[in-house]
Length: 124
Image (cartoon, rainbow, N blue to C red):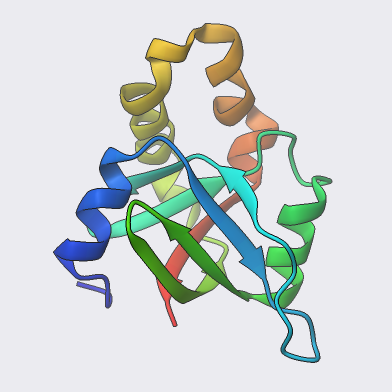
């Protein structure tokens, strides 16, 4: 395990949406944004539905630190760019979890631009 407990990761894997926020340089928390998250093994991943230029993604990438909440879990986290070799597994996890919403909607998180804007979420 990388620090997630089953009591944290399991509910997040089952819920449709979580909220993420990034920390500013002055240690204050920016507002939360609702996004989809997936579990691959013992890791959690998020993607920007609108790619690299999405403001929440740019802030998370720049800060590297934030907070998540959802499914009864709330905790500080670190955001990191994952190794490229997990991209296919993360895409498959998005399809498995969210395809019931329809191809047009899921396309926003499995497109090449979304794949490029994947972050691994780790407990802080």
